[in-house]
Image (tube, rainbow, N blue to C red):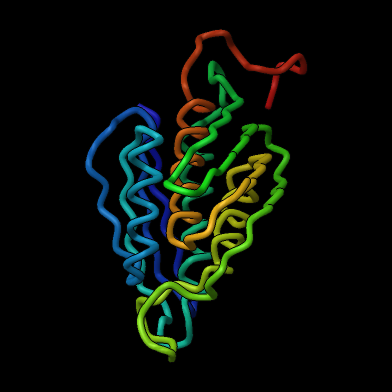
Length: 200
């Protein structure tokens, strides 16, 4: 099975991520940010993978280090699980509706990291209260998460939110579409390396 465990400890976060690309099981996610946990669970379910994420972060500061560093670890875990990438489909595309929203995600497992992110959110934070609290989620971190993931996984990743109003729906549509695109791109096709160069 294509599995990988990644651990990373810094002065800001302590993270362990384990991924299994060939097992569709119940994920275990605990980052300390409830909304982010929910998005990761939805991503894993739509990708058809099993994901475990544990993170202790400096949420007394804000959510930035936690979200970005989880992106780093998840990207490394996906890359490690894919190995030499022989036999995978390589490309994945998904257009996903979420109520009034429509998100489009296009992915190339290329070893050429690049992120195109076209999405705007109505609210700066998903959480409760006017003051930041541990567990809140800053919406600008969606882009930071996917940038960290794309760079560390070696993905060319295009994320386009075509339209929508509700901030929760917008972000959920993006995470679900990314899961579908990854599941498609990582699928085994048994045709060798999907490149005329012979290597990804």
